[in-house]
Image 1: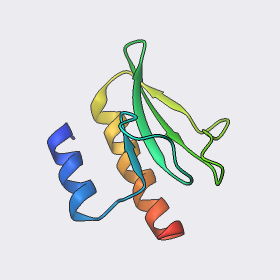
Image 2: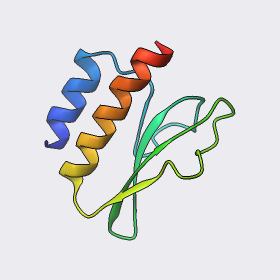
Image 3: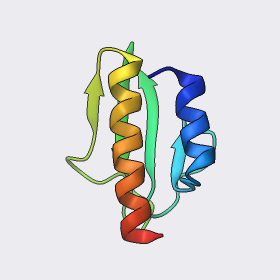
Image 4: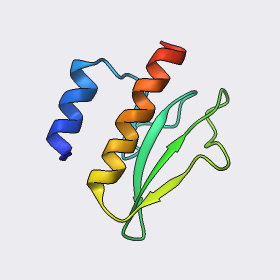
Length: 81
């Protein structure tokens, strides 16, 4: 999955709890993606807007990271609206 496709899914499915490359400050119950040391990192925040210990997953490529991000964002929408 490429970046434009991911952004389209986020918009079309109204996945509002996504923090795209830390474009916003961390908020509660978000799924986020960031790039660190040439790795893509997907994470989840808790009710206090802290990254949940053990929630971070590192990927070697963007497509795998984007797939994980969308999966987690869809789950978060079901759980938190």
